[in-house]
Length: 507
Image: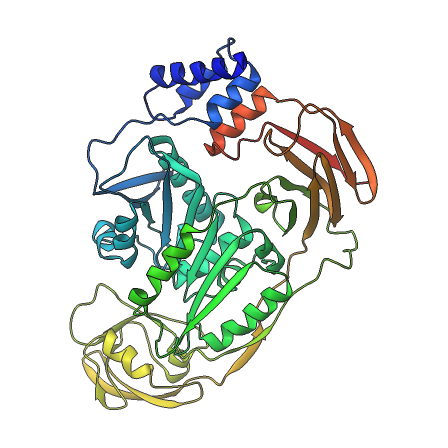
């Protein structure tokens, strides 16, 4: 009882002393305070609640994350009207589509204000962040993923974010990015809500394989539409079926009568937000399956792959899940000049071996008609294209050096391909724990690590680890103060405050 009273007094005292954002200086001051035992320091950090109230609420803040000397990524944060710094607040991250462009969005604040999600964040008094991406910071490359991580940590240092209630959603590329994060870097999030995306996109762009059994570790709420010209529901169903065979924790939903558009938002978003409210992150799940080909994506909650040996024979339980899908997307095969504002569509680049290439289109051509119908802008051209299917013939009337020319072309026939590439070999781990006992099995792994948390185990009795059927660890594990502090500095996660790490070599 005396110890309990002391800890309450200690927390109150520290909160009075450090009424500020949780920054490195604050953490170092706590770490260097020799009056704080390791147990007390853990209690202080994991219960940190004292943040400064922002000067204004119900505001959109444009912020930047400096990635390197030449890359400064913008993001917009909405702070709700009734935000109270003394209360833990859920956070939504919304990923936009169209990340293959050179430049960031020109008007990010206006984009955030007009987004469907903003109204629901306001209604629920949640913080929402709109990261802005380009081809260098796409949702599926390591730079882009680290950019998101950095933004989350900056927000956690300034606002009282509920660590166990961070949700991520997005449309089109944003939906595909949500899938990619769920399969590679789920640790910060409780659940993923991809809209009109495709599981394989990030892997196809980066050539980094993704592993469907990794969907076991987080809840995924997925929506697609039947008339989507990019990611139609009929193709997505194959992925969903395969993911469920891999024991994915996944809910799938379709809307019919819609193309690649979020026009179903008013119907879906109230349902989606109600689902979010039921989800709380559980970093102490008793069972984990994790697979990766890159050590940068080696960690899932309390388990980490720290070394892969691709020369080993994979275990029978490490399976490749793949599906053949039809590529029915109709594309001209050119990039338009977005700076061009006059009549028609100006071509800036031709894709090799595309329909545009085959019919003889060239850079700087200006398309003014399709099938003899006037196309005053790219929108009208794409509208006419939407009526076509693979294998259809068409004509384009162009201006080339002020001369009007008609060219004939044909969209390529439907092709089939493996949805997921496995060009890189992976390692996999499946592990369970109960009480202080861990049972771990590995496949093509030479080293694995287990992270320790005081709320996960009883640190007063030994931790026992069995690795591939052999008992390899049986010891009392104490709080490692230096490790705990470093972990906290890197993640600013008050709930996933790991206090030690057990490295295990696989013989």
